[in-house]
Image (tube, rainbow over all chains, first blue to last red; front, side, top):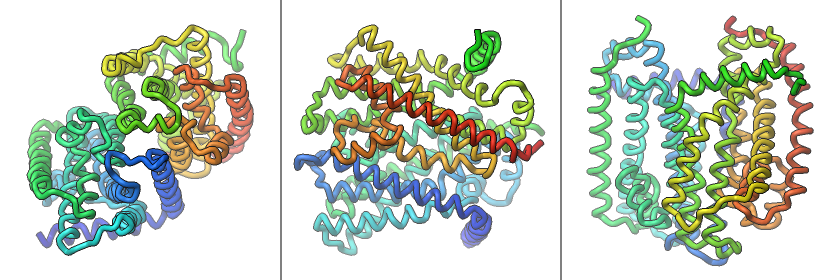
Amino acid sequence: MRRYFKTIRLFWSTAFASQLEYQLNFLIELLAMLGTLLGSVFILSLFFTGGRQLGDWTWESALVIQGVYTFLDGLTNALLRPNLTEIVNYVREGTLDYVLLKPIDSQFWLSVNKFSFAGLPEIILGLSIVFWAAIQSGSSFSIYSLFVFIISLLIGFIILYSVWFLIAASSIWFVKTWNATEVLRALLAAGRYPISAYPIILRFIFTLVLPVAFLTTFPAEAILGELKFNILFFGLILSSLFFIFSRLFWKFALKHYTSASS
Amino acid sequence: MRIFGLSFKVIKTLLTTQYAYMLEYRIEIALWALSGVLPFIMFSLWSQNDVGNSFGLNDIGLARYFLSAFLVRQFSVVWVVFSFEEDSLSGRLSPYLLQPLHPLFRYVASHLAEQATRLPFAIAIAITFFILNPSSFWLPSLPQLFLAYLSTHFAFTIAFLLQSLVAALCFWTEKSSALERLIFVPYLFLSGLLVPLSAFPPNVLKVAMLTPFPYLINFPAKILSGMPVDIFNGFLAQILWISILVPSVNILWKLGVKRYTAMGA
């Protein structure tokens, strides 16, 4: 276990050093992030004109969801996207061979060997919005609600990671999976809004098929102290299943890996 | 008879080869078409929460608007900056620059060919939408269809020129695709992909109309869905933007080619 932590530290410190070369990129990402946040809050505000509510969520509590979404988006940009979109290239160029030969778990190596620091401001800003908006909507934090919030964020992140990894791993068979990630990103954008604001069929799909609800709505309910215990329990089971499935799928995919250009 | 200085023979060859190329990637293109579902997600939110009423829009009008926005996006989506960056970094651009054909025309042809390949998927998605929302079914009149077709092409031209401007920056920096995000973000919120622009507060709308973005989705989608829209001024603005962007791209391109260092060659 200690070996894994040490490896992560080495990975990320080299990533930091190499990214200092592209400071302009960092600035662009920052601008794009602020623009995106401004735009989504503006679009959200349109749903509340004339004193309406969005699926029985108030304006402040809906902002908590935006905060959770921004946080997860930051994690995606920092960790998931730089790592998992590379798997396709390893497969296409045959360099996956070298990864498999390393004396460390290949799924671990592929999932954490890069870290994009441009995602950090988004992570911090997302969390700040969560707490600010939660205070605005009159929630009083307790150790318990913070604990449930952290657990539900973890559940959300594990599900998000597993879905991304499943698509990335399928590149062993289909070399072009870039488009599938775009479909996923488009569907995940549904997480900007509370799940109860959707029609029944979509609520069902976004809870059980592609569990967007577990990514944003439920963590937001957790910090507001409204999350039911059985949902948290169900989330724990669901995220474990997603993660186990991603691991089994990777093992299965590797059996079909035939290597390229060697 | 020549169009943009190209003979018919050149145009035909470009389009047929690119179309043959695109047919190979039908599954990818189907996935691209699917990745445009955002207007449908927004529609489900609008109709479920009865938001349209605050802005004087009924459900059927909204359904038609969001379907039109989806269709317009399908035929005006542009990715030239990504292809160009790849070609530029891998050195594939060098032979293109030697040919007596502006490299941008090759990208135009590949976009048009991709649109043709996309057509059946877009129609299939539209039919699915009508099956799920039968009350929203409508057939636009012929003049409506023609004007929508024309304005979608103009929208594609503006989007293509905007991205070409960013692509030309490839001659200066290696990572110009990162700059594309700075166009995409205002495009996402101001084009009308997420909400019809008539729902914007008046002062935001005024600012938005000064940018090219509303003419990329909102204007053609309104024509197609039969919403009231100022057709004359809309087309005027589209043509104005094209006539500003064409010389800008030309100048930036000429300046850039002089700096071309043939990376990877």
